[in-house]
Length: 219
Image 1 (cartoon, rainbow, N blue to C red):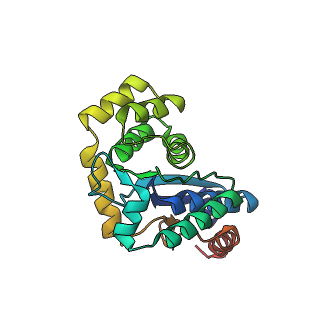
Image 2 (tube, rainbow, N blue to C red):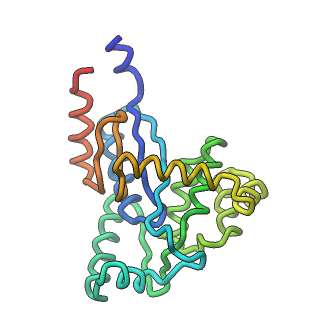
């Protein structure tokens, strides 16, 4: 029985938001650790909204950070530089500028929920990270979201219909509430084997250490 369990891919649940820079950095670090340790795995993405009360049109990112955290411009610049460098180290390009915006992501999570049913959730998640942080696209606009979905092999008209009729709104709300009830209040939250929670972007070496510890655990 133990051997059968060990033969199964490692389940990895990732609770994250597309507008969270450390979520894409953390995922990229984990992905490299998984590759370097040759760990068989399966990733499941789950929704989290950094700013559920964000208006539909979004807000200038610098203004948002100052309001939310009381950061100065110098602190904001230093944070952006740190994130840009961390992204560079894992092959991800951040293009922050004075017009970078924070967005409401509830529609995104509904689109991702639908994409999971089509077998394209992972691809869409990565495309949305790039659209937001690298390309600076307006991910508050459902037409833009439908375009991104189409670029990942999904049906554009159906993606647009999903966004317009909000058919998965309740499913996303329930999923968000589930993870909040599990104690997830910040992201990224990465849960290994449904038992071991790791929060934040821990770095490639630390993720490798976590993976090794899990592999060495008795069933």
